[in-house]
Length: 190
Length: 266
Image 1 (cartoon, each protein chain N blue to C red):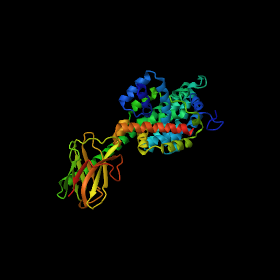
Image 2: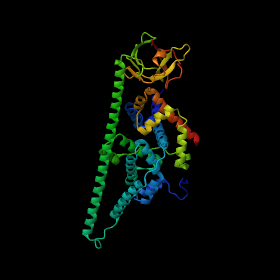
Image 3: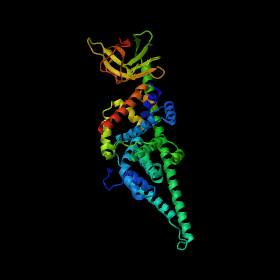
Image 4: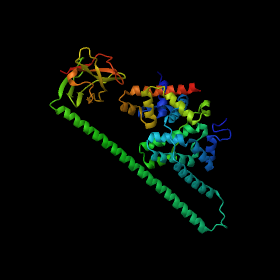
């Protein structure tokens, strides 16, 4: 397979393997590749830069210190990293105690993510962002709002229904139908 | 719909973290029982949800963040390398090892202490922000309460009974102050059906005048309405009646249903 970083570039999984040997260059390469999207996500969730930098630092140090937590066989690297960053940022949002966060550092096993479709592997970050934004632009405003509240604010169906003063069933339909439409869009885009 | 289908419908929301506790617990039990179809769907849904990160506006971390990270990583890599290297007792005296160990301990303690302080500062800041927000909300509520009290007690306020078209429905009351607006209250109100909202209309006195759209609102969980309309689209002297209809979410520019409540203004 040709990496999207060029023929000579290592895949993310190879770089993570090198982290197990405490390879600083591999870490720097992974940081340079993915820190922008991780930072953008964390800033969007926390809405403030200083705390966001602290969380991004935590995320990458966890990667450095516990690279073995990522297993390439269980799914692609970037969705794993983004899931880790989102969980950590939402934890901060909910003001979880430092002790609890530390306990999770030791025991946390992030969920498996299915293999990315083949067409995904050739896309760079800019094209991914353009495509996801374009697809979400096809959703109705309430669908988009409900999905963003769940993803970026970590709210449940009930919390969203209360915040928007809408019936619970309506919010559930917005989120499920919106996500299914995004999924169809991703498949069609291939 | 089979139980399997019901669980399958929850998978996307579960991956998003949006399920409420009861549904989440039930689905986790189903997944733990080893449903291969739902497990596969969950993997796909998690991939889909991770793509939502690309909706975040682009942002660049500072160069200082990378510099800090690389400093920490290089220091830890040095420690790891040193711990792997074979000790040469002949060439390195014990006092030097003791010095290195002391320095390492000091640097680990400093890093730990800095992190602890940073964390405390963040928590204090977050508490302060939450308290400021709460204070702002309370001030807003106080302003609104004063506003409403003024309307209710001012002699120039006119009381309007808004009567239901259906005798089973409750009566509403509007207090209209010529300058401060209209305050509508009611109890035991049914929730509008489906995706509908209640909308207030001002019926002009002018012959053939079209109803003027105003606020949309819902009763609260106890069926109570306390709606402040501080920007009515018409003055009292030009208004014949107030009417309330059920409209699609977001409201309408013209009524799409027969009024459920009507109250004559003069």
